[in-house]
Amino acid sequence: MRPTLLSLSFLSLLGLSAGQPRHHQHLHRHRANRAPIEKRDKITVTGTKYSTTTELPEVVVYVDQNNNPIRTTTETVVYVPASVETYQASAPTTSTTKSPLLPTKGAQVDNSTPSSYPQASPTTEENSSFQFTSSADSYPASSGSTSSSAAYPSASGGSLHGVAYSPYKGNGECKTADEVDADFALIAKDYGVIRLYGVDCDQVATAYAAAKKHGNKLFLGIFDINAVEDGVSTMAAGVQNDWDIVDTVSVGNELVNDGGATVDQSLSALSQARSLLRTAGYQGPVVIVDTFVAVLAHPELCDESDYCAVNVHPFFDPNTGADGAGSFVTSTVSNIRSKLSDSNKRIVVTETGWPWQGEANGAAVPGMDQQTSALSSIKEAYASNASNVILFTAFNDMWKKAEASTFMAEQYWGMGGRYSPCDE
Image 1 (cartoon, rainbow, N blue to C red):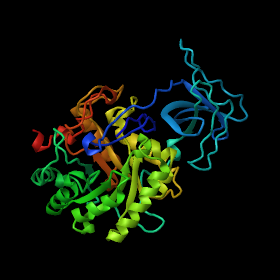
Image 2 (cartoon, rainbow, N blue to C red; image 1 turned 135 degrees about the vertical axis):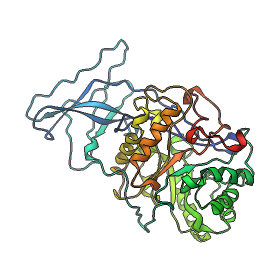
Image 3 (tube, rainbow, N blue to C red; image 1 turned 180 degrees about the horizontal axis):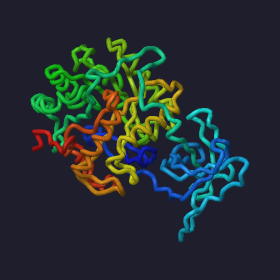
C-alpha cells in the first residue's frame, strides 16, 4: 500500500503502495511521496451547466505539466453561467512566498462525458494544474467483467469479500504448512478469495493445500516481474496444475506507483505472464495491480489487464474519516472508470482497509472502533458486489517495520485486530 488522499464521497491522490518483507522482496508498505498542495477556498468555472451561479463540492485532481496526477481533493467549485461576469474566487491569505493554486479564469466545462475535464493553468512554483469531475456524473462503482478476449465471472463466493494474506511470521521467517492451515481455519468462512503476492516461502503450495481443505479460491501473484517464467513454473507446481482453484493471477504490485517498473515493463510482463499461464493451462484473468494514482495516470495498465485491479486506501487521505471510507473507495473507482477505454470493464479493489492502531492522519484516525466503522462503510458500499473488493489484511503483519511516514500503523491492519496464531 501507499498513502493516498481523498475526501468523503469524493476523490484524492497521494501515492499508495504495497510490498512485503525486505528479504522476501516484498513489503506492503505505505509511504507519503509528495508534499501536500495548499487547499484553496473556491475554484471558479464558467460554462452552461447551470443557469445561475452555483457552488458545489467537487473532486479536483491536481496534475503536473505532463498531465500526471499529483493529488486529488474536494474543493468548492463555483459554476458561473457564461452570460454572467466571472466570479472572482477567493484565495486564502498566506504568509508563505508561494501563491495558491488558481484555475485559469473562465475555464470551460465539457459535460458531454464523465471523462472530460477542464484544464487550468498553474500559478505556483510547482507548475501544477487541476482537473475535476462531479460525483453526479460518475458511473456505478463496478459492473460485470468484460475484456477484449473473454468475459470472466466474479470471484467464487460472490457474496463474500476477499482478503489479503501474507505467509510470514512476525520474525520474518516463512510460515509452515501447518501454520498457514491454522490461519485459513480462522478466516476461510468469512472470505471467498485469499490474495497472495508472490511465490516465495512455498506459499502457493501451502495456501493451495489450505484453500483446498477450507473451500477458498486463491488470488495469486508474481511479484518479481523480472522472473515471470520462474514465477509461473512455481505457481503451476504449487497448485498441482489444478487451476480451477485460482481466481486471478496478478503481475507485480504497485510497481509503477513505486518506481519499480515503467508502464511498458509492466505491460510486457503482463503479456509474458498471460502467454505462459495459458500454455500451462490457466485460462482465468491475468492483471496488473497498481494504486489508483498510477491507474489514473496510466489507464492502459487496466485496459490491457483482463479486468482493472487497483489498490485504494482511504486512511491515507487526511480529510476522510473512517465512516467515509466506503464513499472514498466508490468515488475513486468511478473516477477510474471514466478513464478506461471500456467503461463497462470490471474493476476490483484489490486492497482496502483501515488500521486499528497507529497515529492519526488528520481526520483519518486509527482505532478498533474506527476500523469497524471503515470496514462497515466499505462493505455497505459493496453490498451488491462483494467479490469486487479485497480487504487488507487478514492478520496483523508484525514482520513489517513501524514508520512515522506511515503513521506507525504499518503492522496493525489485521481484520478486527487479529494476530496470526503463530504471532500470539
